[in-house]
Image 1 (cartoon, rainbow, N blue to C red):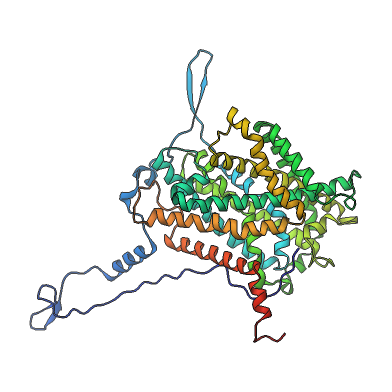
Image 2: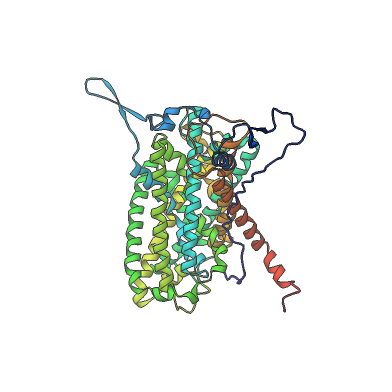
Length: 528
């Protein structure tokens, strides 16, 4: 775990101020028609009939916040709720009598919620304790609540983009890169594509690095290979080779079956960690105010945001739920809330079990627990198994995501003879560059996730979605829309997300370039 110097950091959350100004103009040189007139013996001043001040204020406020006019809505019945879904998913089967029947095969909110939750729970959870240990449990808990709020808003904005695109094109099944290209145009969409690949490759680098370390530990415990005598990077090479070969040879159905088994084992390991770890955790020390350092919380945000990434599956959720806005909102909010509660429990148990350890301030808390002996050996074994399963299940998802992205870039079909012709090259493109980086630095796990969160997540999911929504809702083109805003208060949350993304990128960029360290060393007002 890298050390951090104490310093005051810019708060990530900057409130968006809203100014509403009202002016009074006194006309000069006006004619009788536009001036007030005096009538009657008491010289009572009368004039043109004016709107009540309250109505004018609310209209002015609405214009500043931003509204979407009713005449821009393509299907008013959908907006009013008279029709809840945009299309119907049908499956066809043939009866014994040869009659073809169409069956409505709608997705369930529970299934969509599980998809969002399953995507959110990835290997990023392994880096959370390392990121939050210097900050303290209480400030990091507040930070996770803030991150949950912003990432959930991001998911709802992407759902809004997907629904509107569905209404405009009539074609379900568009992915994230398609949304960026449709809403940003051919030039700006390259920024979205670049951020997409940067984030995914950074995460794959981290997964191969951590997977190799886990494999080293397993082989060492089984007596098959000594970590001290092994060549540097051999664990990463073996791990990447086994995973890539398995995914290359197996069918998607076989991979799904294996992944389902791994997910069940993952859930069992997590339950065991919470059940056993809660009994040995020092919760008193965990919440002690002397162990809380909120001034360092900005450094934890990249990992926290990355741990809550799920937005890639939002277009899939929109398609599964047939564009039903109410169901989609429930699935996204429920699917992000459950993992956030899991992360809080995981963080409390892991940090609570390393309180007072000699190396707790300099080493990864997860590795400390894995190396525990005696009474802590069972908890260490469970954490090691959880770490291995989390990396494998997450790597499967990211492999398929990159495979789909590269086939889109090169215009290759996702199955068939043409795909088979290029399959080996695509897998090499996915695995060889991350493997090269992870072999040169097997401890790159945390660093790769940190960079992915600071620059990939902030651009891809915090900056671009509100930019696209702003252009769609409030742009000069006034394009037709299928749904009104799914996130309330108009421009306010969009501006807040921009400021959060900008603050995160600038603060983390300055830190990683050494700007803060340079200023501290060359500040004439601070004694050396």
